[in-house]
Image (cartoon, rainbow, N blue to C red; front, side, top):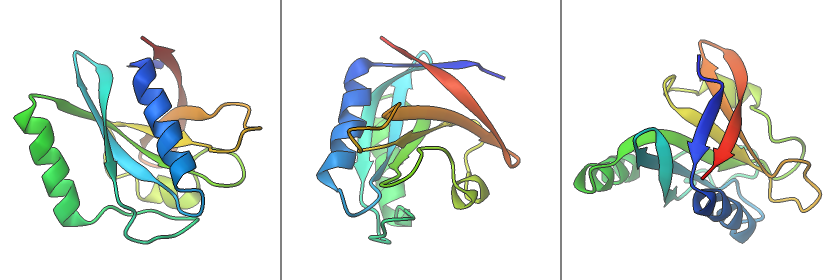
Length: 135
């Protein structure tokens, strides 16, 4: 199991800005790159418009994956925000972790968050936090 994930520093900033632009709704999106380095953010719309849950519409997912392929990028992760509390995976996040080979990032828009962006591997109900190496 990987212990760390490599991410461009701009990607970390973009996820945090996205979370802060939507302070009343969990933001969400996909992450892609090449050579195991996450380099591109694909923001998505949370169709649930919820402060405690997110979902990307199937048609939007299809379009995002098509844009990745067009740019010869590989899907490497997903992200969403937790507006309050700790940015660790909730029971719902764990239950709905449909991409076991991807990294799950959880962003906290709170200025007092000890760690604004955290990364996790979620497989078969098991959660393992990953170290983030910004490049």
